[in-house]
Length: 186
Image (cartoon, rainbow, N blue to C red; front, top):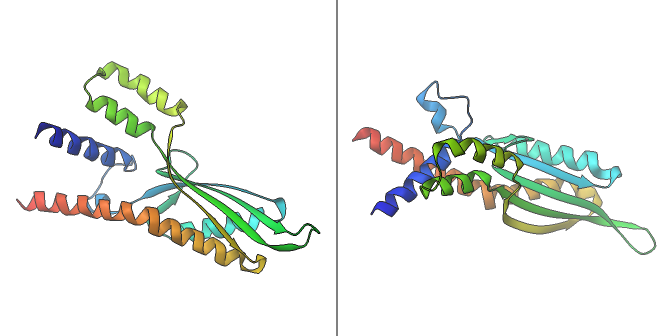
């Protein structure tokens, strides 16, 4: 029983610390989910601008996504290249998409839950978090298509990211909100 409560406490703390640090001025603030996403895009010079623009536009269109450069909840790394024949004729595009989840906070909460770290060591853990680059590998896929469908390819990449990764966070968040409402009603 104690392990279940401890596990729930660690999950609850992880969730609460993942919420933006602006504080809650109203109860509705906690009901709004914000998922911090970092987009790292590498592409050939002649397509880089369009690729980044289309991907950022599609990600911004998701109401619960905030594009960030630091402290992301998820990181999407994309490499985009033109496909060419041996004669140099452009025949299409290929995208490699990797989704990562930074793990430094998760490690910190786990260590704290083990009771093996004193309060004065937390500052060290915060410093370590800034220097530590540990990621959980969430997914990798490749998407190809004709050059004239660049925008559509970017839309499909973001749609898959939304379905495979963001929908899970939305469901967990809704379960948490329901739990809070049920607790408040009792």
